[in-house]
Image 1 (cartoon, rainbow, N blue to C red):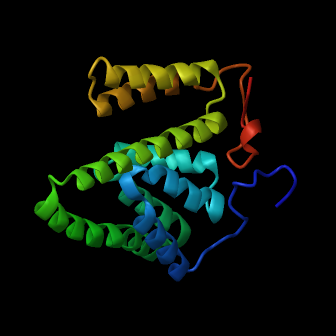
Image 2 (image 1 turned 60 degrees about the vertical axis):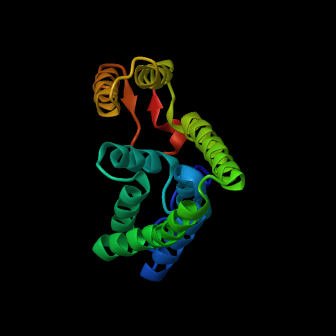
Length: 206
């Protein structure tokens, strides 16, 4: 890795084994409690294994959020396919879903027995609070890397406000934000676009 590369960028030519892909996603699937899976995905894929950089991670996450299904499952398919093709996608998805399916079956049984128990309710509230914290941390980390202009922050805040306060459906809000973002970042005279593999901080300069 040269001196100008971000430490979060994938190693050139990195191609993990199918067993490694399955294991990494199995661990993430078994430890991503409470819905803060985005934080676990970024830690596992960007920070710990350097299979993706932050920009690629955000791009794949954006695709995952616009498709039907769970973000974690969609990300598993996209990342696994990117790393090792069809079998990578299959094993990544299996690794991500297997722990959750097993634990949720057990949790459903336990909740059916003692769902009104104060300890059970306290546990669920604690998990929800922790998940929210993870989401906020990841949002700040990714935002500082991929949002480069004031307009980017305006689009993010406007989209969040439309969903939270105006009760706009999420797909419509994303479509509207996408149209505005494409129009704003369209190629125009005087705007220089850096290649995708350039260091993150040098990709967009006016």
